[in-house]
Length: 167
Image (cartoon, rainbow, N blue to C red):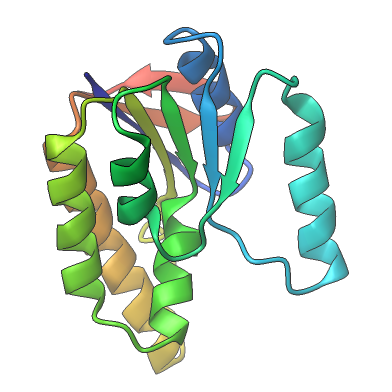
């Protein structure tokens, strides 16, 4: 069982890199999608992601309950979770306890028997956001990414479609 973490900026190629890596771990991977389709633009993004995956992938839609889904699966094929920043945003907008949710996820990852690959955005390298909600999201994403990286066996920084192992 290994935990691998792919992190990078928007449109950096992190999802494609994580998908390729996940396929190297097993032929029938599970894709945990955390997004909620709330408009046409998001629906198009989801469709692009789906179109590039072959039919060997099993997709589970889980905008909130990632830990529970990992536990239900047990030790099966590799799991790709894409993406943690959407998952965090879903909890933030529901006023859930983010620290508790992140701690629950890191504990689940440490105790899982599956190979798990996670994708997240690095959002803290730009300017300080001008509103409280955006600053709260940025800060919590940074703390989440640190915690996920700390329990990961491998961490990849993705820039311009090039994954570079940093841990």
